[in-house]
Image 1 (tube, helix red, strand yellow):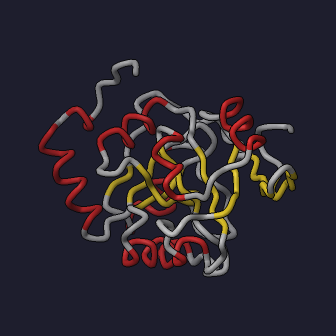
Image 2: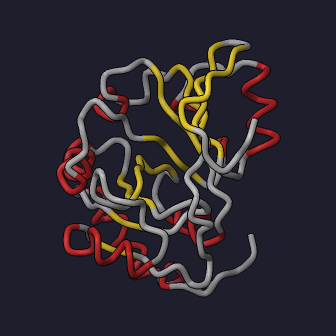
Length: 201
């Protein structure tokens, strides 16, 4: 990974960040698409906080994001050959794959559905963030109030939800493109587009 000099290079800050996340903290960060809001996937208090901050409908699940697909595989059942082909082609990138979840993925993330969305963003700061977070995986959604436009800059994210989260990280020049990811449902060898975004399949 290309070295990026950020606050995440400070060991004392990383220790505090991980402690805050374990205690129910929520953070906002840049990705390759739009700004994200995230927490640890095994922390129901933090997931509740995300829904409350956004005013998000509880029937809308969060997705899991990481800097590596290897970190995400334990959260899903065995993926099909088509799924692996899509991962190899589009991860990291602006594709979210919804597939059957494993026992490791809590139902409070998936809105009681048996599927979960996974994605590996192509953004240097986000990759650095995941590399220092214990477990390397975040339960995420976009960093904006529900029914408001997605945040596309640090200022927009801070103005939208900055008062409600533990940290809004600067982007350190790793700006997003401003278009949401394409979301697909993967069922064996079938693909259903749930949201058309940056990637055209």
